[in-house]
Image (cartoon, rainbow, N blue to C red; front, side, top):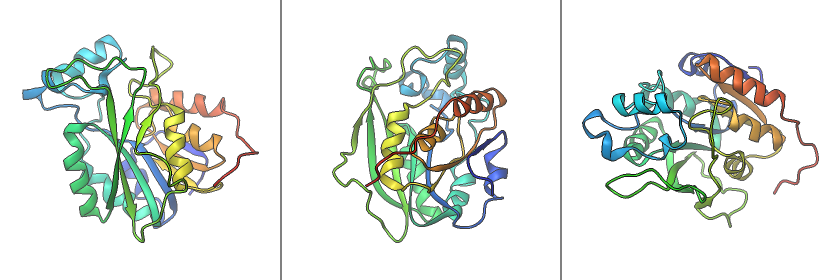
Length: 245
C-alpha cells in the first residue's frame, strides 16, 4: 500500500487491494444518480450548480452527472468498511433523494449512523426546484465501532462554508471547498493518519489532507480529473507547523 498518492483506476478494483483495517478515515463525494428519469425536473439538486452547460443538459436527460455514476452503494461500502480501522469515521456527501438508500446500505455493511451534517453553501443562490430551492447538501457521518468522539466536540452539524463559484475547465463540476473538507479531516484524524477518498475527483480531499499533515490515498477513474487532481496535489505545499487537538 503506497501512501500520499492518487491512482487513475476503478475504486472497486483498488479497494480490494487494500489491507484490512489500514485506513484512519474516509471522506468522499460518492457517485450516485442525481434523480430518477421520471422525476428529473423537480429533483435537480445542488450537485448541478455551477456545472458546464452541455454536461448539465446531459445530466437532466439521463439523471447522471458522470459516465460512471451507476455504481451501487452496495458494491463499495463493504470494502470501505473492511479497510477502515476500528473506532474510525467515514464521511459521505450525498443528496436528499439518496440519503435513505445510502444509510441503509451503510448499516448493512456494518457502519453505525452517527449524525447527518448539513453543508450550508452560504454564498449560493441555490438551484431552482418546485419543491423548495436547494441551498445545502448533506454529509452522512458513519463510524466503525467502537464509537469515538470527534476531536472538537463543539463543532456544529451545520457547516457554513462558501461554495466554489465560477467553476470552469480547472475545476470538477461537483468540487467541494477545501475548508469544508478540512473540518471533517481535522475532527476525525490526527497528524500522520491516513485519509482515503475512493472517488477523488479533482483531489480536494487529498489536498486538504496534505495541508493538514495527514497521509492520503485517492482513486479516480476519469483520466481527465485524475490529471487535474495530480496537478492540484503537486502544487499544494505540505504544512509542517500545524496544531492538532
